Length: 205
Image: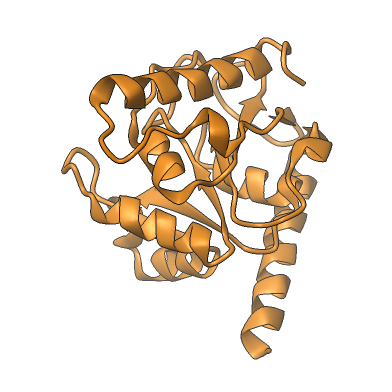
């Protein structure tokens, strides 16, 4: 019970900071599933993306994958762990992050993932990686495409930020079977990335 109250207080504090510092608008929240255990797959613009998505989606329980370097600072590492983050070593082919992601989804947490794997420097959506497809296929979780949208390259005080959520991609569109191959994974990844791009272009609100 104490942990739940602590999390709610911490969540409320972070939400207050981001809504106070930026001019945040959420669109398409009706597309978020009522039942937990789904994936939010978003483009990646800034370090502010995970808390922006958490604050606008109103997800009480969520996890997100963060690069291992962010955990080197003890205080910051403790804070983001409390907010649901867990580390991945980029470029290592770390399969543990796949199993950790699936486990959290099955525990009823909502997973926030950035398929591009790194922040976009020019605001354009990158090609994405197949990890999101593998996690979705292994977990059987619904995938909600999302887009963080703002003008320019950087966020600043009271800048307008739109977080837009699209229609969920059901598990039936993601099933690839036990003997899947790279081509199937790429197909699922391209479907997810295409829906994110559509949100950026305001075609799938």
